[in-house]
Every structure is written in C-alpha cells, then in structure tokens.
Image (cartoon, rainbow, N blue to C red; front, side, top):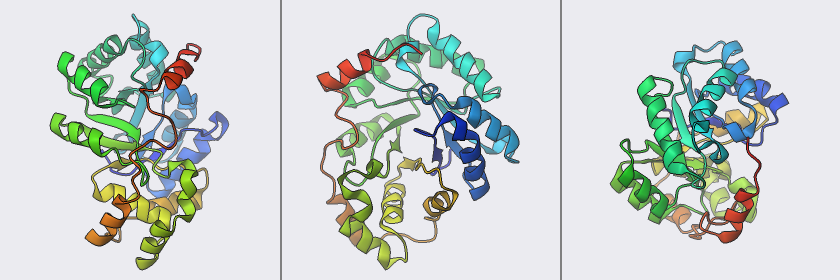
Length: 271
C-alpha cells in the first residue's frame, strides 16, 4: 500500500474521471473513494483509461453505514465492484462506526475470503469502537482512516492502533483549510527551510509519523505539489514544533462520540 494516495472526497461525479486521470499522470498509484462519494463510476473509468495497469493501482473503497445490515453489505460490495469495473478492491473499509458494524465487518471478512477484496479495515473508529471490533472479529482491521492533520494528531487513538497492529491513515490532512491551516506561521516557516510550502511540510510530517495520507485537489498542479514531498526530511526539532500544534480535538468534524454527530448520521437516507 502506498503511503501517499489521491482522495476523491467532494470531487463531483462529473469531475472524478478527469481528476483521477490527472492524479495517475502525476504519479499517484493509490486512489481512495467511497460509496457515499457517489463517484465510483468516474474512478473506475479513469483507471481503465489512465494508461496504468490495474495491478499497479491500489484502490481503496468504503461501505456506507446504511448498507451494513443483513445482506445489504455484501450486495453493496458487489455493486461497488460493478461501478468501479474491477474484479477486486485492494482495501475495503467500513466508513462509519454507526449502524450494524458487526454484520458489516463480517461481510468484509467474507469478501476477503472470496477474493473480492484484498484487505479490510475501518474508518472513523475511535478507541472503544476499534478495541471492541477487534475483540469480536476474526480479522484485525488493516487500517483505520480517521481525521488526522497538524491540528488533530490522534495521539491516544494511535497508541491503541499500534497495540492492535492497525495502520493509521489520515483523511483531511489539510484540515480542510480550518484554523488557518494554509497560512499557519509554524508550518510556513518550517516549509521555507526546505524550499517547500507549509502544506508540504504538514504532509511530510504525517509521513514521518508513519501515517498514510490521501490529500485531495481538483487542480493538477496542486496534485503535483502534494506529491512532491519525498525529497526532504524534517528534523527532529521541526517535528517537535509541529507536534505542538496538536489541539487534541477534531477540527473538521465533531467527535464521533457526539450526540449531535450521531443524530446527523441517523438522518442520512439509505444509499
């Protein structure tokens, strides 16, 4: 699994093919989509047309929580395979810790045994969600994809993930621009030391903490900039400075333990 991929959250379905083709041309070999993003078809079209062998692409997808119950999870995985136009998905995640996550995860385990997916994991699972699931399921999640960036580094969750052998994957590595991310003086000053932007320094920080990242942009030049983070290494002092930016709280979305967040998700229509 590459450490750096291209995420298509909030990429319009009509733009998905063009964006993924651009990302593949830049050099990305991991693409992260989800049933909820409603752009799986465009991702699949780009993979077919992008001039890169399917075997060289690491494809990540996610089952939406309204598809967890009964036989819906298995059917939704088959539907995702159809939309993507592929025989297998490299990594399939449960997208949220809500709904019948035990049944949903068992469907992932069945898909893994059947060869429809090659690895399985979760997204947005906090320590209690993750520990509970790992205790009752047969296959430990390979990955937990959670909001992670300079302002929210998930240090407590990471400790449990390391104990369980679950890899840390970041969504929202730019905090979706919140808290003045792109103008932050600490990030900007550190980036300048290496001839990079503050955003590149922030991405490099996550990589050096062994966190998988999927920055998103719809602009090819920005995709290339986000990809250009392998020719420098942050010093221990710079790493310590960025660690100090951690607020210990989510910035993009309130905690998945929040009653308001739970109510919001319960209002989502079934896919």
